[in-house]
Image 1 (spheres, rainbow, N blue to C red):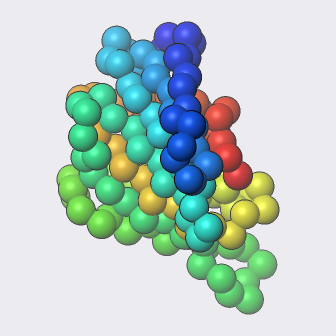
Image 2: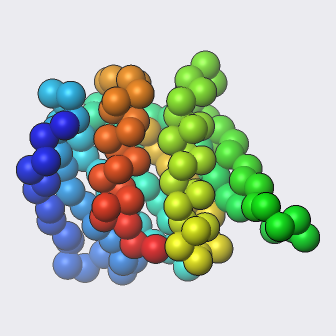
Length: 129
């Protein structure tokens, strides 16, 4: 993973956000993190489109141990590691004290564990929660 992150932000977009790009395993990866009132939207793409979209949230309940729900909105159903990526991010969001849900879009050329770990790492390093 190349650690050189190029960042930019559009001055008039009304939603707080971060946009940056980096190389992960030789693939240019663009990441957009937006913070809406009730959820976070994270888009990571190597193909220029949204790709598989997942929704993740913390289930509220009386249990001491939190539970999380990750569902596929649309896209690749045969890629369990994409769900694992969403789960890691929603757990991090929850542990930080936020109750917002997560919408995660992954448009990737490379679905390897290394790529997904790189995306989780860079999103957490640049988080808005």
